[in-house]
Length: 183
Image (cartoon, rainbow, N blue to C red):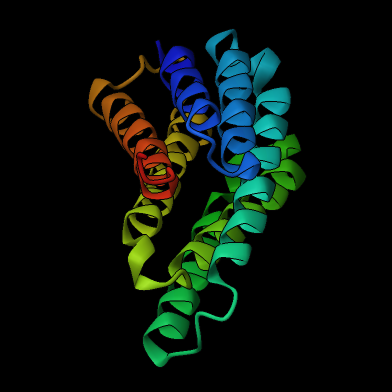
């Protein structure tokens, strides 16, 4: 279900003539979802790699869209709050990461870069900025579920629903905010 929703967004972006970085980011996310739909303990690293690539595409796309957007204190404060808060969260996760420490640090860095680039977008892209922040919130909840919850503990429904809702809604908001106007 999760894979098909993002794959459909990728197809919509492609068919509508959206920038290739958008549909490439969505396609990479769908590949990541496919990996994570299997056994996460086996496919977590390939899934993270696919999402890492998706975030690289988003960073480049958002930087291109935000070029010349100007500098403002609210944007810089928002970016600083996001990056410092994200870094503190990742630091808090460290005791639970074990061998996943380096991949999580790399992934955390790229998703925070994506969020910082989204915050700097011009106001017309507010839906994209909101979507990026929803994506980050989803991954923060997922990281807590993957690394902090005891392995023998049953999955919790509310966080699982929150991850799915924030992730899909975030990706949909990014997509809707970047689709070209209908002719």
